[in-house]
Length: 87
Image 1 (cartoon, rainbow, N blue to C red):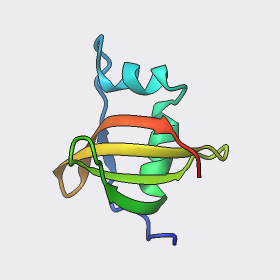
Image 2 (image 1 turned 45 degrees about the horizontal axis):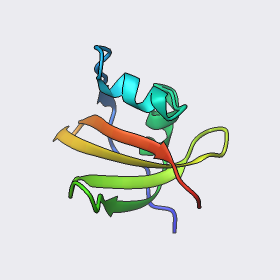
Image 3 (image 1 turned 120 degrees about the vertical axis):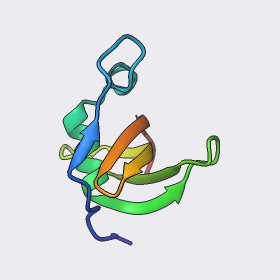
Image 4 (image 1 turned 180 degrees about the horizontal axis):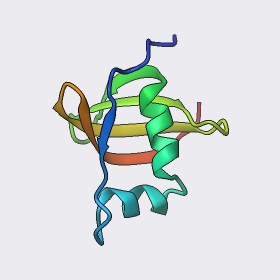
């Protein structure tokens, strides 16, 4: 079931070595891919491994992606992890 778009407008991206930009790139994803998924989630979840809020959705090019994040404030998120999964 499709959920309504998330109300976030700002993402925190850490470009330092070992930051979240590097982490999502290791999974062949870009910031734009992840932001699209977060803003257009298919379902909201909780990460089984970390307990963080998470979601699943499709990138603009059709890949199904899991995203775990921390909500910094009502308008800001920090993406912790993102990787492609089977739908």
